[in-house]
Amino acid sequence: MGSRRKRKRMLGLSKVEDVPLRSLDSSRGTVSYAYNQFKGNLLTNFLNDLVVLQKNGLEKDKCEIAQKALGCFVNSLTEIPTGGLLTGPIFPIAQKFETKYIEWNSVENSDKNPTKKRRELLINLRNIRQKITNKSRVLQFELANNLDVLILKSGYEALGELISMAPSEFKNLAKAYSKYMKRGGTGF
Picture (cartoon, rainbow, N blue to C red):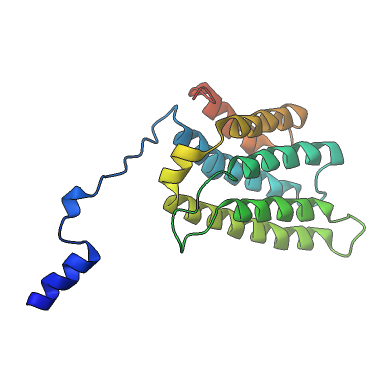
């Protein structure tokens, strides 16, 4: 029995109440809420719109605006600490999403079966988005306290520009963006 107490003491488990709790506010209007909406709602609806666009892809000028929004999203994550030895940073995963999107839109319609190629890349994009979500769950506290708000706001602005430039192509994204903005938008 003595060895059990000794192990607890060595591990620092005997005084759990002394450990300060890290609180997290992810209510509407907070940075956490804005990030979670971008990652969860807007990226998901962006992918939903890519399903419709997979036959022909996106025109170059519209693609560049989408890349700008994704680039701002990635840049906003570069300041996020890893959250621990085994966690690792989140921005490389978001960067893979951006790169895979560029690859998705770089498929030429003259290629052999471009729709199939884009469909495969869309599956990769979904998997990467899920990895972003999984990593975000682990890093919520770090995201809330270290996210570069101005760059994230630039990402929202770029999405707004994309939607106004291509409303017929991004119907799902436009609906989600409009709903988010009606609820207070980027007024954090």
